[in-house]
Length: 345
Image 1 (cartoon, rainbow, N blue to C red):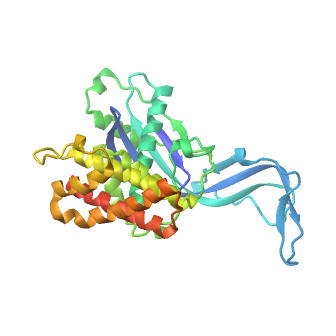
Image 2: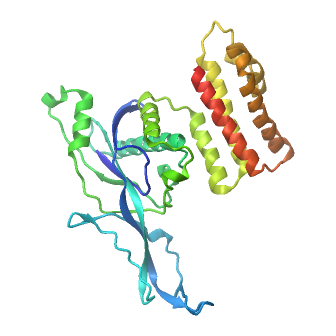
Image 3: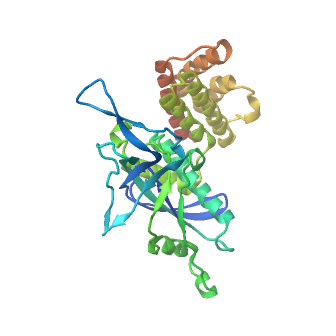
């Protein structure tokens, strides 16, 4: 049983879901977000410095040092309540810590192992956590929540517990044993290193519905239906939103669309007469496969996909720099195309 603390809001309804991933059975529990405090401990004094506004002031460090390796996300209870006291005041005398309030979300992942606790089981739990995060980010378009390897300085594993079952107990239902561990075990959280940014609010995600997102996430978790193109599309959103790299974003989203198109042809069985080997490039897929599979009703989405393909070709072959508007429209079209493909497959 592993508990993780994600230094952000996870915008799904609290609850549990079972899922199979890479040959193992897991149960993940998402708990409601709670307040916490992010702190930077500085090995130096913070001092007040002159400011052009006589009524204002600024802070600086007496002997600046690299402090990024000493950020922590604190979560603890005091007399049954969260202690979120901000550790920075305004007198600027000998302070060595900056803090701000934020949110954390607790996740628990339970699984079974014949060998008890080990590095291999921990790696499996982290892999399952990453799978949840990838699905979550695709469904919600919330790119502030990263997979473990992208969380600089952040090790999300906090506490692990192992319960040994007797031979008599082993005959019980597999999922029942996992769920009992998830429900009964109540660890206490201490502190965890993080450099993660604060998450965005629900209102910052267009057309976001928590109930709908929860259902879609549960579907992808429990069905193992999460193809590579969904991961790739999420990366495209990141390139546009976080890096303002609009050309790279279009290239990424079109790669995702190519993957989805080939998956579409692969998943639809004869007697359509359409086989994957028929096409050696995506242009043939768009022009021919859509018509053979879906007829004239697909003409509109085909034309839109070609719009993205033309911008993509300009970027690749002519060194064209895409505009934010072109990027936004390309991402929108790819999303529409994916939904169309999903409805058919």
